Length: 447
Ligand code: UMA
Image (cartoon, rainbow, N blue to C red; front, side, top):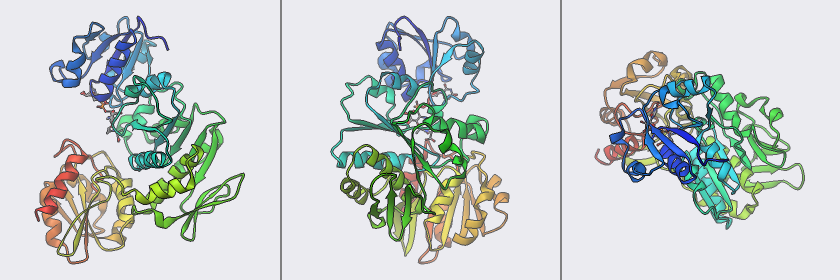
């Protein structure tokens, strides 16, 4: 892709936009940086490139597009953004940062997408590769934009990339050597416009693959029905509920990998230290990718056995008077709450709330009845969620997370579990889910 002499608008001066601007400027393009925030507050990383001769700051409106060849939006810029809508009307090319990066990356990319489980699976897969002696870069939505890697010497054997639907929005040729779609449930509908569009964009991860590539699909996810027939890559499907031959499934206490050629491989479920069936699915998907990339079964068992999961994903947060607390602050949508609840067999006091993302909390009802003895709603979303739960379980409402934790602790009896799995964004009280989870853990420590 020729960038020299091109005039390119980069929208959003966060992590991605700044890295993309630096890359483009370094390749001879003229970059116009725009952001909805005034330019004084774009942070230190922006200051480091602010005086480059190839960079100008543009106005945050469609007029900035005059004479522009290309637009690179940051992932957080929704497709209905005025500048993007205008660029489309004017037939100005728009590509996402992962598409730009892909054009310059020579290392095979293993891409992980799905509504839930992406970060855990990406991290686990990175660990497996390392255990197998492969040099690997782990990046993407997990926190290191791929465009930064494109500017590096690229000496790794593989890239394991967490890919969000936002990043898939404007791809043209992005072709991962192996790609997996863990699951699709309702999320980010306000960004994509509809669930159908969200699904379409997510499935785009397979769109440019070729027959020698690998597509890993979840056979139990009904939103993926029919997808296998439209994928050009070879397909491996995994299921946590039924036998699949060929495919990956559970039998007795083993994950069985039945391949079209060659004998079955069997991996003991006891190697998985993470709770919940969803984590078994994450391991199955990782296993398929790792075997495809030449990791030995022994290294897979070794790496999975040693993997203890990530902070804020159903993480044990402490115990007081025989009440156990779990931090699932990363559970910012209804499906993640369902997954977290399924993990527990003892009575749960569930902390639900935060900033509303228009989730359908009605879907929680059957599991709430089965698993919870109490729900404590908190934060901005508490009033909207309450009627959706239809009185299925006792409910308390508190304005803040702190008040919710105190309320839950007060109601808990020895043997109970208090689970923060909010099903909402954190932004009403916190900068992000990590800050919310850390604050929760601090509250538990101080009880
Ligand atoms: N901005 C605008 N207009 C808008 C929205 C934002 O100008 O309409 C500006 C903001 O003022 C800010 C900048 O854009 O200055 C932020 O851009 P961004 O939101 O794309 O954030 P980045 O810092 O570039 O981080 C992005 C991902 N963020 C999002 O997708 C929202 C990070 O994922 C990712 O780690 C990073 O790139 C590196 O790849 C975060 C995330 O929440 C963790 N992802 C979503 C998720 O996981 O659910 C998809």
